Image 1 (cartoon, rainbow over the protein chains, first blue to last red):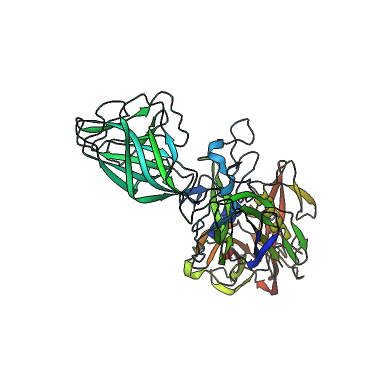
Image 2 (image 1 turned 135 degrees about the vertical axis):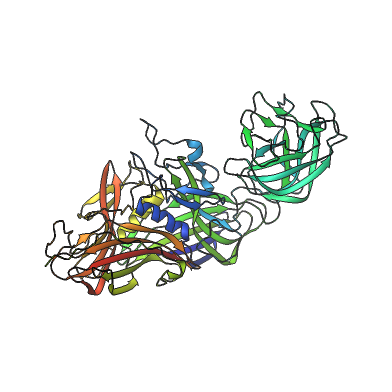
Length: 398
Length: 222
């Protein structure tokens, strides 16, 4: 049988051991079985196997690979933090080895390998992510809202389309921390009297377009804002902050207005937009379906703050150490260091392992999947400047 | 008298959640081995279910290679079923066990050996060969390997690897050992490795004209 030991060690900043815990891992979940199935059965891209990735998206996975046969499925070793890890989906373009579009096959290092989190709900086979993952970084609690992402210069057009019923406009974005959005600022002007204009935050779907579910909304009456281009910055402050995750695409969606004579106009850069983490979005059927433009970006600011319980911890690389056998046992070691530089204490209640699954032919893509998850009870409190070393030791015994 | 016709097409059954066998304990990843003997009319004449002794060292080595993404330029050596150390790297072929009809390089393999498994086993002790031209004394007809898709219940997730072994040899054959062979790869060379080996206490007899179905259900229990 294959089992695993889980070892958690808390170290001071000089590396001295402060606390050590060892427990049997309970952890391999169905996605681990799913990846083994794809390998054993050589599941093809023509009949892929659906799996749910760590972002909750359904992905078609296969065990297929083309001429050079490399395949990143079941990868656990990883680089630190947000450094990119290229994962071969097993696809080659003609005459070129080890290729596949890098933007579809690069996963940030923190999303592969051992993970830590704050969740304490019992593990089930169908878990697809850590319940409340602690993200990589040094951010601690903010004293006040800050701008976390924006695009504020270069506007040279008055919007893709005026905003009034049926015509909604949007802008996708990403942030690099677990954030509570407090407000959004947009550079806009009115035509006539558009009345209340609503700004909503929605999560992006697999195409990076609004998924139709408002995470939060705010309506502001725009009858007294600037009446001509280039407009002014107007703030929409949410009554309750909106929690979003890092490196996930979200969308600002603007809707309202009356008609083409009483509409809101949103300033955009239509000549040389440089916002890297999103694109301009538009709908002509009241948000039922969306399209996008990668040659335009709207003017916007996203304000928010990191709140207590969302402090970040710095992920080192995920190491795999040598394999060893002594009859009747065999084992290898997976290890990762987590350094707390957030300014506050972080309590770890869950750990797990994210691995890679890929699609060879259809999208040539790779994604991260939960393969193991464990609850740590009581949680391990890692003080500011301390280091948590998490080790999994998979073992077989005949 | 006409020779008994044995069917080589295994029947794939969907395992309902409530039928997932629970022989492993929380925290284990392993296999449940199910052996079913059926007569020519499909009537079950014997059935057994047991924990597999799995896995042997090659399973962990192949898993480590894939988890670590060991590259072609710095391969790792694993002992293949021919007792040769082979340089292996990460690939989409690792763990492939989709052997076709009559294929004994990969897939579920049966044998007559009775020595208890050890972690260093790399090959089945005494293989029962594929009967390519029945009747062949001591040989069974290996079907193609088929797979049951993953399923899970409140504690256990699993998928199934299935192979039929039809006996048209003219006499009874007792299967004492079961193994799983899989692929590994480097430098355009595909190699074969044993990842599981089980010895069946007392063996399971497959009378002439009957078929043994072997189900390996790989499971993880939380």
